[in-house]
Length: 256
Image 1 (cartoon, rainbow, N blue to C red):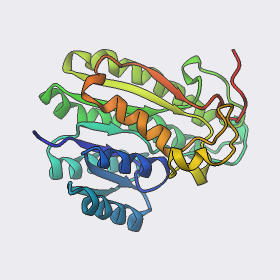
Image 2: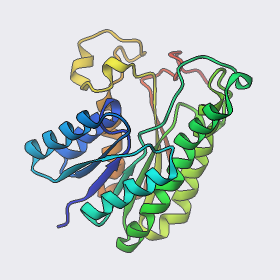
Image 3: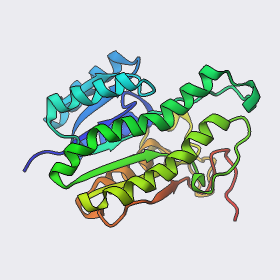
């Protein structure tokens, strides 16, 4: 059987890296996209090939740039012929707390292009090969309760882009169902940097900030992505799945 290929944007570090490790361990061959982390991406691709034997490549490109998205897909298809699983992990974020009126035009464009337009660019480019084989998995990233279009103070551009992306993800699910393609959104909770590349077992030994008693990890997210990518997960599409441990993105206990 043909090995399945996964393209992971922002796959050189953090949750993207943990997802790459998890999928490679489960038999996928990977295209690991990076923007600036060339050394890390190449090292990861080589490490995964050495450990699991599958072909893995690194592909440079800024997902907020349309021409880069075209090149990312072109290079991936040249190496593998198809993209079976597309994981939209990369998404720019500005940590500085600022109100809408304080964003520059350039900052707004960058956040919307990187978190919303990029999904259109990359998905449009991989759908033809998915349609040809009557199979595909598209996985996007959001934040807790994004489907309710909540206001998010100091995060207007990011929140607006991700809210639009929630609708887009569900639209893709409806439009592409006849072609055997699913589309789902995963919404990580407050997973802090030091845990993004960690395993669940490591977190279980540390008292964390979530009601379940530990910190969230990259493995928590990677396991959900792998489940959605599975052959038997075809009945799950158009779903928005929170993975929060009981906390929202601001570190507060979830309430109805």
